[in-house]
Length: 159
Image (tube, rainbow, N blue to C red):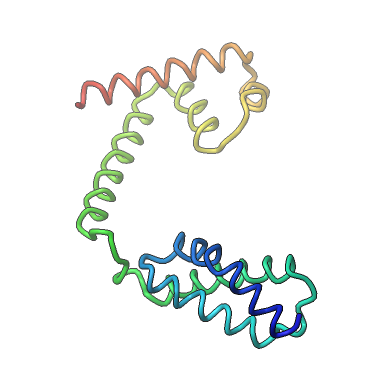
C-alpha cells in the first residue's frame, strides 16, 4: 500500500476505528489517542499492507488491543464513571445472596441437594445425572423442580 493509499484508507476508516476504541475506553479524547497510536503503528508498516481489507482487519485488531492495554495500565482504582462504593455494596449483596443460596441448598434433602449441585454447580446434563444416581430422567426433573421451589420459597420469605 502506497503512502497515498494509506492516507485514503485513514480518511475512510478513522470514524470506524474511533467507534471501536470508544467501546473500550471511557472518553472520546482517550479513544482518539488510541486511534492515533494505532494509525502511527500502521503507518510504520503501511508498505507491507497488501489490501484495504487486510489493513482494515489489522487496524481493528490494533485498536482493540491498544484500548485493552490502556484499560489495564489505568488500573482498577482509576476506572472512570464507576462509583467504587456502589461496586463494593453490590459485591457485599452478592456475597450475602450467595451465602444464603448455599445455606438454602444445604437445607434441602440430601437427594435434592446432590441433584441440584450436579446440575447447576457441576454443569452436568440430566441424562448423565440419571445414569450416575440410577434414577429416571423424570425423577431427576421432579427432584430439581422441588429443590428449586424450596429455594425460591426460602428467598421469598426472606424478602
